[in-house]
Image (spheres, rainbow, N blue to C red):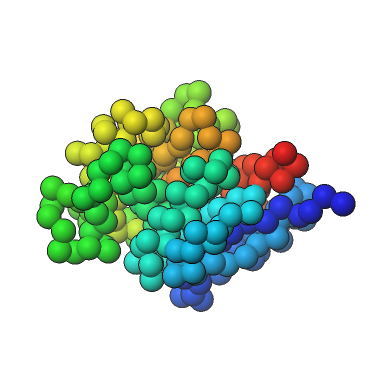
Length: 237
C-alpha cells in the first residue's frame, strides 16, 4: 500500500493564531473535495532544531505565529526542505523566515536579522523590518509574474489576499537574494514583495499573505492545494 503523504506543520501551535485554527478544516476539505489526504504532524519550532526533525516528511509548511519560540528551529526546517527538495510553503512568518534562511544559508549574509526576533539589530542589517503600515487584518491586491510557479498555481496574474502581519522584507537586500537564485513573483500595488519561489526546486513557495485565511476554510486556497499535490507527488516519487 502507498503510504499517506506526511506534512510537517512547523510552528508554535496556539488557539489564538487564526491560521492554526484553520488548518484542521483545510486538511479535511483537501481530502473531501480534492481527494488529497495528508497525514499532518505539528512540530514546535523548539523541536525543529533537531537535524532530522522534518526529514522523511513529504511537505513542510512553516505557519504564522511569530515571534517563534525558536528562530533557529524555523530556519532549520526551511533549510532541510530547501536542500532536500521537499515541497515547502511558508506563510506570513514562514515567508519572512524563508527569506532570512536563504540570505544566511545561500547568500552568506549571516549578519542579516529579523527585527521582531532581534530588536537591537542595526537597521542596516535588517532583512525583515517593521512595516510603515501594519497589514494586520488587511486585504490587498497581489500582482503575479507571468510564467511563474505562482501564476500556474493561481491561474491568474492578479489575486486579492488576506494578511495578518506587521513585518516585511527590507528592499535593500533583495537584489542579493535575486542574484543568488531566489525569485520574487508577487508584488502589491506599490511594488512590495509578497511571493517568493525557488526555481529548480520541486515546490518551494513563500507568501507574506496567508492563503489559509481565504474564504471560510471550506475551499482550500489554490496554493494550499498545490502544496498538497506536491506532497502527494513527492510520496509517489
